[in-house]
Length: 336
Image (tube, rainbow, N blue to C red; front, top):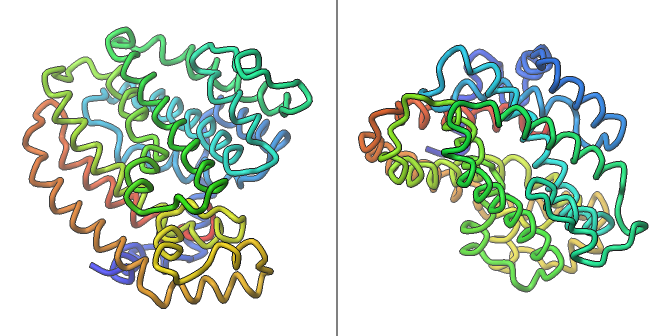
């Protein structure tokens, strides 16, 4: 299935991937109270991302939250995962900004109660204290709410490990942008996919899943590996142009273009808006996006064959949910 075919699927009921109808639909989503408070504070303190992003992801959690989460717990879970999305997004944006990498290097340790400022010898004037205060308060809210989950103690070690992996994915993107010569598809696909937060999301779900059979944990995580790569592909093919304009070369699409000599890193560094348009046209002409959407389709077929390995979760429905996420990525292109 081509990128265009996905776009046709995405247009059902929306009028096109960039349709005003879809944007209006997402903008009409009402965030829950605590998420709304942190979205307001984000707008005051940081403001790089439009509120559309928080509404977009909150609206999608129903599609790929594990079916083992009881209906009475789902609203709380959606809000916890929306707050986690805010936390991860702020860290990711810090990691990709040359001016904010020290703030990222401190902020990434907030969930693990590590005094990173002392550990790394970071001076107070090298970090953005207001952003760190925002992250600390946001994490305190996430931590306080997930601790009330019925299986928190059983799955918190996995949750913390997976969150570290997410932070490591951001650090890898930072490393690539600082050392463009290392950019390669194999490492990008291996490391960068964890930035999609699929495993921490699932960790929150499992904490709230009294009926989940722990013996199926390995099979579930195997499926999640493919699903997070599919989610990463959806993000790559719809955000690489914006990121290219920001000087971020860590997207799989741009990494492939660099490795194949379609573009050169020095061209990105010195590019103005018109040059960037020409670089983007050159990348599109090589069909790299279509390669990734074909890979998405292959993973979709492969992972569906393994969904029967899990019985206490409807894994087929979760795969369907990731297909919905792909369609919503395409429908929201240019807004996230």
